[in-house]
Length: 250
Image (cartoon, rainbow, N blue to C red; front, side, top):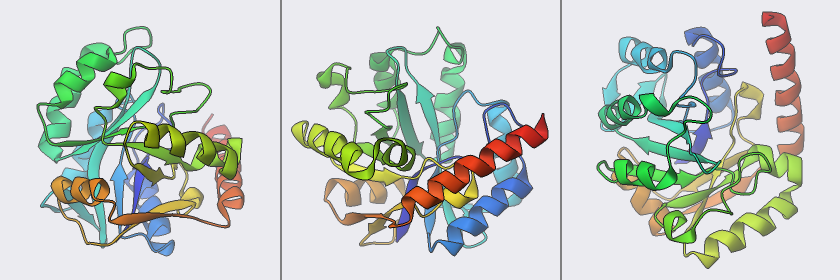
């Protein structure tokens, strides 16, 4: 099973959720031979509930994923923490809904939830917890107390960071950092625009239909990360297209 564990369904936080735009994303993911994605939209995106209200209305939900035109879409969200950094949480629909409601007081900059408290809240659910782009200049994680970071399930080898920092350079930071804490690394495109799909994917040995199966395959190392030889071109084209689409909306 090929899965991207860090994706977005909107062009940016400020825009409305569009089913047409989302389906274009799904079709492009399928063109890049993906079988599944984790939809980790920003938890404080404009009208977050619209994303999952639309999925509930339009697509069947089975096991722990939505079936969207042959693609498995696992629910999730990307959460800002007080210490500066982003955490990807992937889980059952009802768990993501419930935790998102608890995070409502923490959606504004300057009021983000402390990492320790987020971990405590997340521990009440069966969630896949991934530290997003740990060496990104604007939202790093490497500075945070390692006793807290060690409670994550994995770190994110991020398509955007591989583009901006260089594949070798970013990998040489993320991989040893994760290894030092005994945590695996998984790939995520961090796409907001469909061209970016396929820049990095995870090839799982097993088909997964539940969060437990996802976690077990990651913990047991039953997958490999595939970085596209066209990563630079894909991300560059997606950034250019995203800029043009945002300009057209203004």
